[in-house]
Image (cartoon, rainbow, N blue to C red; front, side):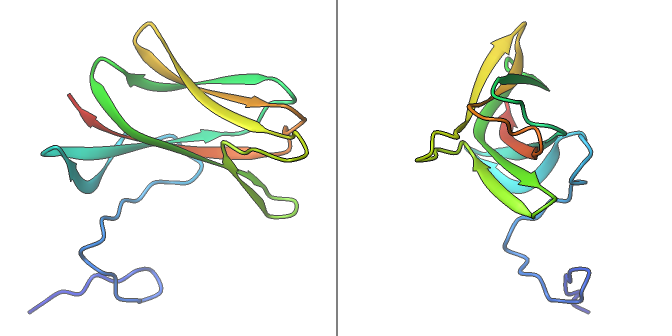
Length: 134
């Protein structure tokens, strides 16, 4: 008998699309995405950022040792619940209200750097770092 993979609402899911589950507001252990890059399993680490900075720089410790991984991509999204506003990070604004995203390595640990040019402290954010192990 063939089992059909369904989501929580009973919709049939395409088995060819990799899926992973991760609690939106909880930092967890890396999860396999189901994809392979250069023959290696890809993982994703999801990181919650409870509050963006007020016209300043925020350093976020990812807990990932750069000597053990090869980063494949980083994505980040800011969210303000009061009006359900989403902002992709990095964000370049014509009104000079930018949100920048960068990285640095300190003692072999990867950090995300989020810099704002105006007060964004009423936003939280979610970052995903995809990688393979070396």
